[in-house]
Image (tube, rainbow, N blue to C red; front, side, top):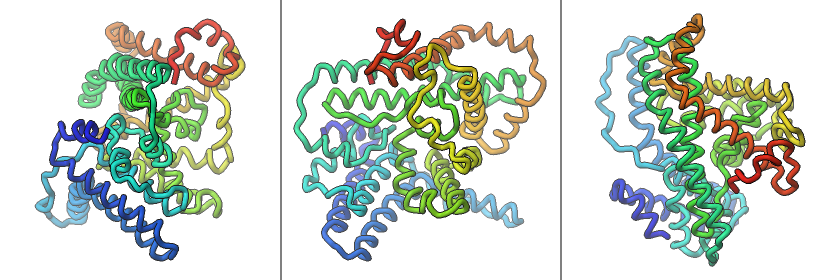
Amino acid sequence: MLIASYFFYGIWDWRFLSLILLSTIVDYIIGHKIHDTDDDTRRKRWLWCSVVFNIGLLGFFKYYNFFIDSWVDLASTLGYTMKSTWTLKVILPVGISFYTFQTMSYSFDIYYRKLKPTKSFLSFAAFVSFFPQLVAGPIERASNLLSQISNKRHFSYAQSVSGLKLILWGGLVKKVVIADALGPIVDDIFSNYSSYPSSTLLIGAIFFGFQIYGDFSGYSDIAIGTAKLFGIELMSNFKFPYFSRNIAEFWRRWHISLSSWFQAYIYVPLGGSREGKLKTIRNVFIIFLVSGIWHGANWTFVLWGLVHALIFIPVLLLGNNTKYKNTVIAQDSMLPSAKELLSIFGVFFIVTIAWIFFRSASIGDAFSFISGLTEFLQHHIFIQMVTEWQIIIFWLYCFCVMNLLLEEMSAHRSTLKTGMFGFWFTPLWFSR
């Protein structure tokens, strides 16, 4: 498995295998150092060694040029002329954001005494570089993945069939039919937004919401399905997020491995929501801003995180962050209620507006794009546009219906209390 993973990554650029190996060696040693001492000061120092090393590695390759350019721009704003002479022409290693967080979580779990370090360096190296989820997640915890790698596994026909279905659904439908079909249209609209009417910009924003979901969720399904072929169960990373009824539910369903990582290793250690409203607000801002910068080295990602923090805080302060934790849309009902549909459309609208910052090349472009959305909708152009893209819109409609069915049946597949959806469409269920 380790050879396959290193071969998979090395095909892209074999030189960056040294980074994975170095990260593996460092956290393997640090894990044992933390476990082998009872002195809290020394344990904390070793933990900080892991954090500084991994964040330093990530910061150098992903954010060095970003911070240099930002410093130059700030100096220019203050009237000083500087050049970006210190920037480096460094290739961003694929998947570095994922495997650095994965190795850090190993050190954190040992520090918090949730995990004992493994004696097998081979198993740990395979855990860090496990190729199905190496470059696109989900970000796995050692308590789940490492234990499965260390134990003996046997081929399971049912598990493999389930994995192949996920690969088919994620790779063919989500990635190819949805994301890849929408990609050129979204690129054209966001690149030439000043030339299009507001109706086209609205469709472009909506299409990007489906494109990014198809990409991220599709890759995760492929990773989870491929892991099943090896007898390994990875954590679910997306659970029908566009059927969320408030923003807190959205973040329990979107990129779950990353959201839970930030909650466990940043939000809770900072105090979570246990130390008053002001610190709760501070902690929410921190995790969403960190989440934004984690996604990319651009201020647009930081602003995207800020927008979500501003939306999330009122829900948290009103105590509605756990309101829909144990329920799904149209639970024990034939159809969603009008209130549920209104909530879903409201959340989707807010998330779609936030996606504009995520997708735009600059903050100025994002605000210009949003400004274009507020102009008068030119209905005749809208109708013409829908006619030209009717095939894609048809597929999106089918995609939404299928996801709604899967959401309904996922919640009730054990009892089959699925109402009209489950009774009519149970044969369409793709087992997760």
